[in-house]
Amino acid sequence: MSSTISSTDLTTAAAAAAKQAHSSNLASSAAASTSASTPDSLSSLTSNYNQFLTLLTAQLQHQDPTSPTDTSSFTSELAQFAGVEEQIKTNTNLSQLIALNQTSEMSQSSSFVGKQAVLSSSQMALQNATGTLQFNLPTAETVGIAVTNSAGAVVANRSADIPAGTSTWTWNGKDDAGNTLPDGTYDVAVVTPNASGGSSAVPFNVIGTITGIAKNANGGVNVQMGSTSADMSEVISLLSPSTPAS
Image 1: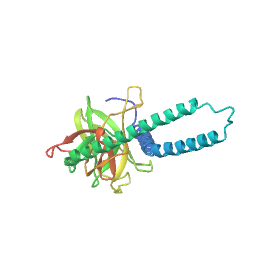
Image 2: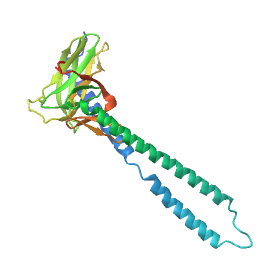
Image 3: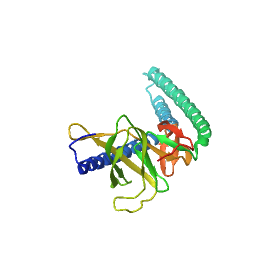
Image 4: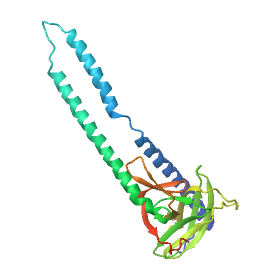
């Protein structure tokens, strides 16, 4: 693909995109952690209900006998408490059903362990000093590929010629200084020159070996690739043993 953008500008653009991917993944992880930390609604309701009854009893004991308190509002509030309690019990039962479904899905997915999977993700698992990206491009592209570590620092910034069709690119786990980095989770971004002299993101998937299956906080199941964890919904396909990964 012809363009006026230099290889230096291409790798610079890839580095900026990789840092953005790292920030987005951090935000997503934080949001998932927050949504998982929900209070015990039934305990909260019980506490509020007991306080309500205490106040109601005190008010009835100290009411003016010549002008008794209208109990219609109390009756209405008691009915509201009962309705909320029933809804919480329904949600509790639903949570139990979700947990049972998670257990069933984990059991069914246990056969995935040891297999290579293609994930729709911008997080690449470096396993045994190998990380793999998969491309499916309509035309050949010259791309810039940047990899960041858990601190968001760019550790590898490469350019590559990717052919048309389905192909893979493999990272050897070395940084730009030639040092071998530890296995773990790395954020990735891929860009290519565009007609306006800038760069555009290139779609890609990641390939890794599934090492475990675990429940997640959202009622689903995660596949684990070493220290990397991804929702089962991100799994696009499993590769047969005869399918080369690189």
